[in-house]
Length: 178
Image (cartoon, rainbow, N blue to C red):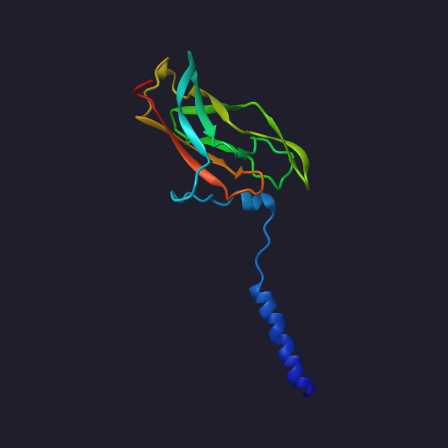
C-alpha cells in the first residue's frame, strides 16, 4: 500500500472516531437535564397528599407527604458527592406568594456502596414542609390563590444493585378544600 492511501485511511479513521464521540457533560449539567416523565415507567415514589401545618398573618406552612416503594431509596436534598442526583421539590411560582423555605423531613438510612463508602439515603416515608409568605397583604389568613397549587418532585431511585433514570412526580394541592 502506498503512502498516500495509508494517510487517507488514517484521516478517515480519525474523523470517524471524532464524529462518533459523545459530548462530555459535567455531573451538575447532566442533573439539570429534564428527567424522564414517561407514564409507562415505574415511579418508585407515591404522593400521599398535603395539608396545612400552620397559618400565619402573612402566610402559611404546607406539608407534602410521600412514600417510597419497598426495596428502593432516593437521595436526600443535599448530597455529599456530585455524582449522586439530589432530590428536589419545587412549587410552581405565583405572584401571590413566595416560598420562604423547603424543609425535608425523613429518617436517614445509612447505605453502603463499594466505590463511595457509607452515605445517607431516604427510604420509606418522607415529607417536605414549605413555608409560604403572601406577597399581597390582602390575603390575610386566606389561601384563595388558585384552584390548585402545582409542584414537582424530581428524584433518582435506586435499589440494592443499580440506580434508575431520574423521575419527575407532579403533585397538586387543592386550595379550595383546605
